[in-house]
Length: 191
Ligand SMILES: *[C@@H]1O[C@H](CO)[C@@H](O)[C@H](O)[C@H]1NC(C)=O
Ligand SMILES: *[C@@H]1O[C@H](CO)[C@@H](O)[C@H](O)[C@H]1NC(C)=O
Ligand SMILES: *[C@@H]1O[C@H](CO)[C@@H](O)[C@H](O)[C@H]1NC(C)=O
Ligand SMILES: *[C@@H]1O[C@H](CO)[C@@H](O)[C@H](O)[C@H]1NC(C)=O
Image 1 (cartoon, rainbow, N blue to C red):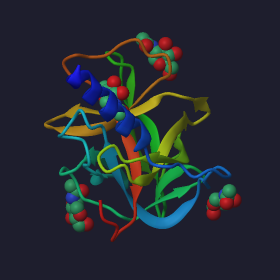
Image 2: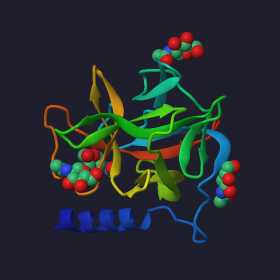
Image 3: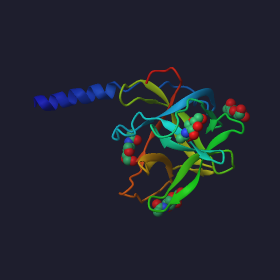
């Protein structure tokens, strides 16, 4: 009985401690102040609170990996909902590589070429560890195709970024895909 009461009490605390999401118009899908992207999925310590890193893959492309693989960046911008490195020419995050039928996923990477772009909305959320208000990228579309989810998947001892199409019924138990939340972090901000 005591345990049950304690459970009720802790659920009540958990329910009331969710951070307050500001109301108002939708957030702009342009963020011109440079940022990093922190990943969240508290069930996966190898991924949770790690960062999206870039890797010079040749030919002007930057491939994307979960830190510590690759180089960290705080130069990212969001332009019309597209994650962009403001280089000359700009590199944009697209979804078009290495389609994998086993789990119906397609790789996200950054390029100057015109592949279908990964498009995001901007939304508030609550940090699952600290309950602080945070700004998140919410996946919206691959080019003109609405929906799906962004996650990461094991790749040569690292993790790369993979989009799973809407309505996907398959998963590869040998290479489990993990959904991640992407959190916008400005340089100098504490995690
Ligand atoms: C976002 O930025 C782009 C590029 O500068 C601009 O064309 C577009 O109008 C902006 N959108 C909004 C909603 O401010
Ligand atoms: C990291 O950045 C350095 C300096 O630009 C570059 O020489 C190196 O190739 C990059 N490493 C990766 C993994 O992209
Ligand atoms: C793969 O994703 C597409 C949407 O991009 C969906 O139409 C299709 O049913 C999915 N296939 C499987 C096997 O889950
Ligand atoms: C963590 O990943 C698993 C597997 O993809 C998923 O079922 C779960 O919803 C994810 N949790 C969050 C908070 O994204």
